Image (cartoon, rainbow, N blue to C red; front, side, top):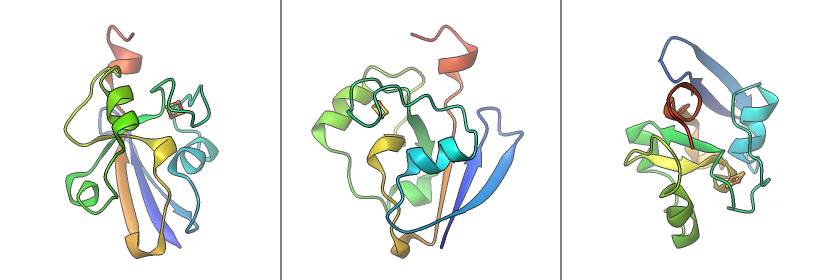
Length: 111
Ligand code: FES
């Protein structure tokens, strides 16, 4: 099992959940009630599944595709460690993965 940590946008809430290799991060997040809409269900057409990966974990993930990078350009509150949760599949080599919810989408001007 892989320990996935969800951190709220303001850092005040931290939840650890267990997930199986092969599961998609977006599905794990939604099952836990995290505020990721995932409107396009992984078609890379919405960016509402944007998460910010903790720096150490970001370096261990497979690189984002060009399509994913293009979609992230449209997301609010993007950082150097932003990814689309619908494009991250958990694999057992990860052991753990920590991601933070982007604040701008829900709390500030949004898009
Ligand atoms: Fe739409 Fe990920 S769910 S881009």
